[in-house]
Amino acid sequence: MHIREIPFLRLFVPLCAGVIVGELLPRFTVAAVITALTAFAMMTWRLSRKEFFSDTLFGFLLSLFIFSAGYLLRLNDLRRCSHLEESRQTVTVRLSEYPHKKNASYSFSVAIISVAGRDGDNAPRDKLRPGDNSSPRGSLLLYFISDTLPSRWQPGDQLQLHLTPRMIRNNGNPCEFNYSRYMEGRGIRYTGFFRARDIISHLPAARLTVRERSQRTAHALIALFAKAGLRNEGLGVVTALTLGDRDLLDREHLEAFARSGVMHIMAVSGLHVGMISMALSWMLFFLRGRLKPLRAVITVPLLWGFAFITGLSPSVLRATIMFTFLQAGTLTRRPASSMNSLLASAFIMTAARPAVLFEAGFQLSYLAVAFIILFYNRFSGLIRPGNRVIRYIWQVTALSLVAQAGTMALTVRLFNIFPLLFPLSNILVVPITFLVLMLTLLLIVTSPIPFLSSFAASLLDWLAGLMLRITGTIGSVDRAVLGDIGFTAAETVLLTVAIALLLTSLLRVYRITLKPFIVAALLFAVCNTLKISRESNISGPVTYAIRGSELKAWQQGRLLIVAPPGGTLPAEVRKHAAIRGLKIEVIGPG
Image (cartoon, rainbow, N blue to C red):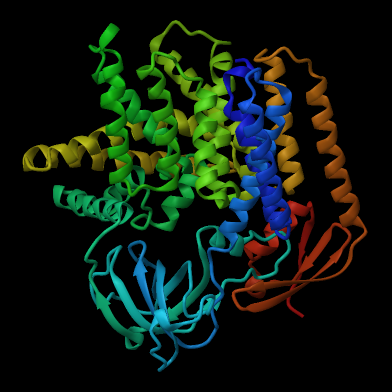
C-alpha cells in the first residue's frame, strides 16, 4: 500500500490537528479565520494560473486551510451548548431517545426548545434578547425520579416541566475520565432531576426527524422479538447484538462479556455491518462480470436500511459510510483503497462533529479497523492450514490478535483490564454472533408468518443461551483478566505507535527496519520512567470524591495508603493507582 493510494490521510491529519489545537487553545478565533481566508485565497490564485500543476506549495496551503477549518469547527462545536442559570425554570424540551431504566429513575437526553425564564416567568422566546439564557442551544440529560413512566414517552415527544439545571462537572479525582467533556461533545452541558409533580404537559410528536423515526423503528423491533417468543436473557442478548441496546441484560452478564474479551460485539458497529455485507455478497454471488456493479447498487441501500433499523448509532454510521466508499469503488470500476475509505469516513464524521475525535468508541473502532487493514492479510498468511475448520479457527484468531494489538494500549487506559483469553472467546462467540444476526433478520422478514418467526425465535433463544454459557465460563476462569493496570495518555500513544511499527517491520508491510520501533519503545520507557520518578517524590494527602462524600488517602512515594469505608476499594482509587503505577495499602478506619 503506497501513500499515494490514501489521499485522505493528507486531509484527515491536518483536520485532527486543528480539532486538537482548538480543544487545547480555544482563544485564537480571529487568527484562525485570517489563516483560513488567506490560504483559500492563495489556493484560488494558484489554481487560476494556467501553468499550475500539483505542487508542494498548494499541498501546504490545503493542509493549512483544513487545519484552520478543523480549529474553527471545534470552536463552533464548543459553543453549541449555551450557559443556563442554575435556578428553577420552566423548560420545554424534545425527547432525543427512549428513557433508560435506572435503580429508582429513568434517564434520557432531550433537546432544549425553549426556557420560559424563572419559575412563573412566561416570557415568550421571541421577545428575549439575543444571547439571553432563555434562548438556549444544546441538550439536557434528565432524570425522572419514579419507578414507572406516567405515559409512553418516545423520541420526538415534547415535555414542558419545572426544572433546575445543574452543570455537569467532573468529581476532581486524580486520573478520572473527563465526563464533562464527553457529555459536552454530545451537546449536553447540564443535567436535571424532576418528579411527576414538575411535569406541566406532555405533547406527542407531530413530525419526526429521520433519527427519531429510526429510534422508534428499533424500539418496535424489540416488541416484535418479544411477540415472536423471545424472553428474558434471550431477548436481552438478541437486542444487544442486533440493536446495541443492553438495558435488558443483567450486569453480571455484561461483566462476563467484558472479562472474556468480547464486549465489542455488544456495540453494533463495523463487525456487524461487515457481516451483513459479507452475507449479501454470498447471496448475490450470481451477479458477476458486467453485472457485478449491481451488487453495490443492491448492497449499499440494504446496509443503510440496517443502519436505520438499529437506530443510526454513531458506530453503525461510521461503518456504513466506510462500506459505502468501498462499494462506490465497485460502481466506478476503480477499487477503493480500504485504508482510504476508512479515513474518508473518519474525515466526514470528524468534520460533521469534531467532538467525536475524543470519544473512546470512535478511537477504538478506527484503531481496530486500521490495524486489520494494515496487518491482517500478512499476519494470517504466516500460517496456511489445509483443513477448512483449522483454517477458520486460525483466521478468527489472527483477526482477533491483530485488532487487539491495535486497541490494547487504549483498552488498558480506559478500562484498566486486559482479558487474556480473548482469542478463545472470539473463536467461539464471533460465529454465534453471525448466526444470531442472520436469524434475527430472518425473524424480521418472516414476522407476518407466526410459525416461521417462532421457529427463528427458538433458535435465537438457544444460541443466546449458548453464548451466555460460553462467556460466563471463560469470564469465571481464575486469572482470565489482567487487572489494575493502566497507562497515561502519552504512554498509550507511544505504545500503540511502537506496536504498529513493530508489526510493520516484522510483517514487511513497508520497507522499514526495526530502528523506528526501537525509538518508539525507548520513548515509551522514558515516559514510564519519568512517571515513576515523579510519583516517587510525592508525599501528601489525596482526596477522592466518592458518590457525594470524600475519601481521604495518603500517598508516600509510590505507596498509596487508603482506609476505605466497608473495606472495599472504590473504583476511583484503583484507577488512580493503576494509571500512576502506585501500590495500594489498605488499612482500617481511623
